Length: 112
Length: 114
Image 1 (cartoon, one colour):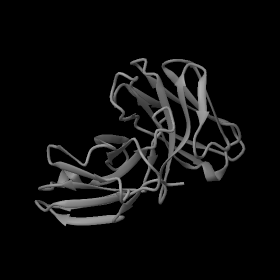
Image 2 (cartoon, chains in turn blue, orange; image 1 turned 90 degrees about the horizontal axis):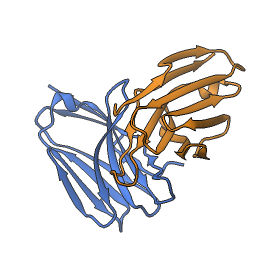
Image 3 (cartoon, chains in turn cyan, yellow; image 1 turned 120 degrees about the vertical axis):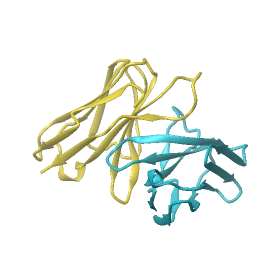
């Protein structure tokens, strides 16, 4: 079963705008991770936030985590055409061996 | 791709035939994973390994088996392929406990079962 559910499923914005994607999950977690996938490629890790953290930044990325609501958001500021990709959240529930459960993803299109 | 290769990259096979996909890593990482990716489902874990000869089932393991006889290779076998196993298969690794908790993915294998 899917642990994370991203919202929206698809998002289209103009270059320079900010993009916000949300992820909800069902069980307690050790950490939550965001990955990007360009069309036809493997996933690339973007950022990890631990259950005792509320916000984390990496370059143009900002991730928040609300464990009381079991939700996370990924903000990409000043988007570029190269940010066009699918974005997935993944949760590590601590079940062992660092297993991740992925959501279905948000497909982001950044229009030049 | 963090030194991860998958072979073959593309394969077309017929229902009922056995298929083996290979994941090879060059950095002796302990943890390795096999996922499948299907439209509308995201990535789902098939099997994973936490060391040589140490493997366990994931969420969608039915119809799949794995083997890890060497640190660098993790094999995924479909004993008798079915059309429902048409998918893109990704291998991933996680560095040992001294590394971060993120996973690094290979380029994927696109499998079509006719």
